[in-house]
Amino acid sequence: MEDKQIISLYHARDERAIKETDAKYGRYCHRIAKNLLTLHEDAEECVSDTYLAAWNQMPPENPHLLSAFLSRIVRNIAISRFRRDRAKKRHDGVELLLSELNDCIPSAENVEKTVEERELSGVISDWLDTLTGDDRALFIRRYYHGESIKELAKVSDIAPQALSSRLFALRTKLKTRLEEKGVSL
Image (cartoon, rainbow, N blue to C red; front, side, top):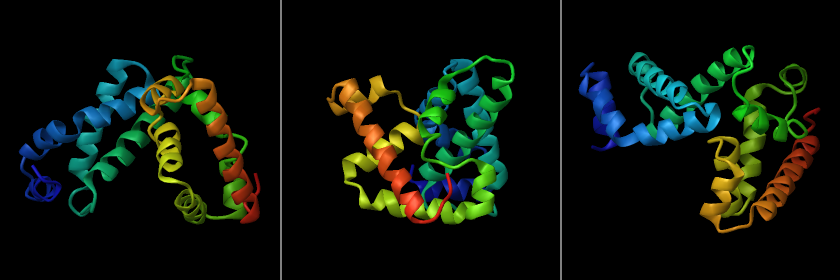
C-alpha cells in the first residue's frame, strides 16, 4: 500500500492503518530501535509505541514521507527509553554512538547558548549535502539509524578499521564545519 493511502487510513481513524504500517515499515522501525537498544523486547515495545504515537499524531500531522516520520518517532522513543534504562545500567548500544559524536556535537547547554536547535540542524543538513552520496548514507546509517561498524563494513564491503577511519574523518569535517559556523563545542 502506498504511503498516501496509509496516511489516509490514519486520518480516517481506520485501524488498518496500523496493520499496513507494520507490514510496510515494521522491519525498518524494528531495526532502528534494535540498533539503539540492543534488546529485542525493548525494540518491540518501541515499535508498538511508535505506532501509537503515529496514531495520535495523525491528524493533524500529514507527513510527506512516512518512513522519515516513523523513523523520527521510533528513534526518539528508543533514545528516551535508553536514557531511562541507562540509569539502570542496562544498555550500552547508544552510549558508544553518542561518545563517538561527543567531540563534534555540542552539549545541549552550549547549543542553547550559541545556536537554536533548528539552526544546528540546518548546519548539519547543509554539511550533509556537501558529502558524496556514499559518505552521507554512511554517516546517517551510523549516527541516525545506529547501525554497527561491523554491519556497515559488511554492507559497504569495506574493512571495519578503514570504515572507522572514514567515520572519524567525517566527524572531524563536521566538527570543523560547526566551528566555522560559530557553534561552540
